[in-house]
Length: 426
Image 1 (cartoon, rainbow, N blue to C red):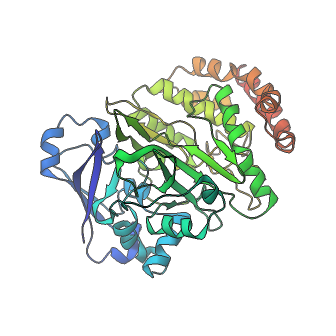
Image 2: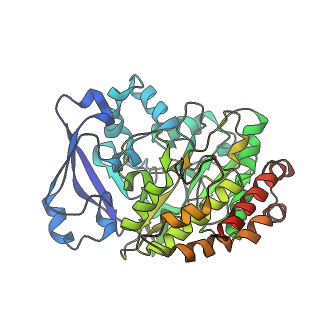
């Protein structure tokens, strides 16, 4: 009846606290009530409450008993979902409903992204497995799939919908052989990756995935915070992870928390409003104005390049050992308007600020920031991107985005440029 929450600090796992669902609420899963409490032995040496030591930014390190009518939102960041959830449900012989959530937490949250885990779910390193070649990963050989599922290395797809394809959390050893994340002892890890495949079997699914790497380079050219380049190899996208780094021979796990969690949204699939996430940035980011502008810059590009999958679980904070809290590098940024399932715009500014989906009123958006930033300066910041938006089709060609995709966004780029020009007249 208790889940032990551990946190990785300076390369070492430490018990941070415990979560206990309310008796009788287990069948309700994440919609049921629960209690979280920091461990006394954790609180005493961490009373200065550096953000990276918190299990969630809304949970300062103290002796308080945190009661909630739903599970704490940070648990949803580590609970298996999408393809990963389906794999665990199958392995555990459960029905895929709310009643399965507790067993999924206790079994499937042993090695999620970020620096949290559930101690009861930890699977010890595998020992002397030889690993897999890149070709075996790309071809999704049966032995690899079986081993990855057994290690819990299959994670959610991009949109938490039933048709998503699996992503795999993988690491390479020093011989450059591939293993599921968590299968190696930390000291043997060379680097850490996320590898994903098309969401479906259509040519459109492959086009979306194939263009994610060049889309990422467009974002880099646009001035957005990005990580290392992505690599598309024969139908698989290899993504270097930014929540892991090797430092002085140790594997360091950075704190990673989605904006949904930071905003206290303890449910899946809810359409988010950007104003809610911007409020979370204002409350918790180290450099509030810098991060608000980073968020705005990303949203300009989301609407111009028609990445409709811009929900609050596709944006996150990184929490660093020195206490810095900032938006992570961009991720899950792709031409989702081409997706055969028709992904609607997941995150919006609300009807007043975005009367037409995908066409925010940038002037009103700037005004909405006025409690935190100067509205005129925000307008000027938005307008400063006008020429870069107009040049996006050219930039996309330079970054090797396919012509079909460019043709699909060229009109929207022109519209967003016009909207930004209007914002400058306020």
